[in-house]
Length: 99
Image (tube, rainbow, N blue to C red; front, side, top):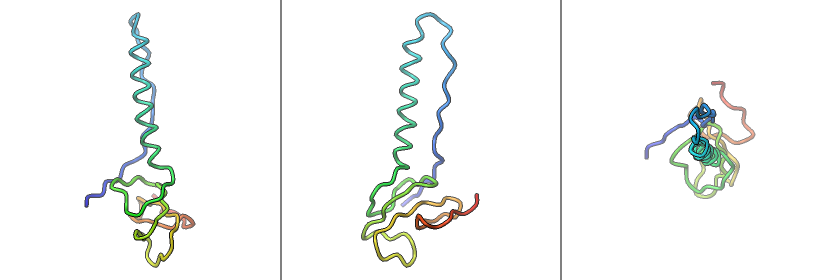
């Protein structure tokens, strides 16, 4: 299994169109770009998981469910987050590694 770590996306508006009639295309493009950013951030919302996500994003939160126990010594379902700087899952109550 290949694990990919991605940084959360950001949104920066494009320059306003200079040509008359370009407003509609500009708005359509901006809405598509906003939709992509919102979908990416949806992945950061806490979700229940019984296996590790295929794509890891620093700070993503999961409720690790049986049989997935990513933290050493974990025996119950618990909230965990991905700490990219430490390259490991940590219990949500644990302080992150400085990056």
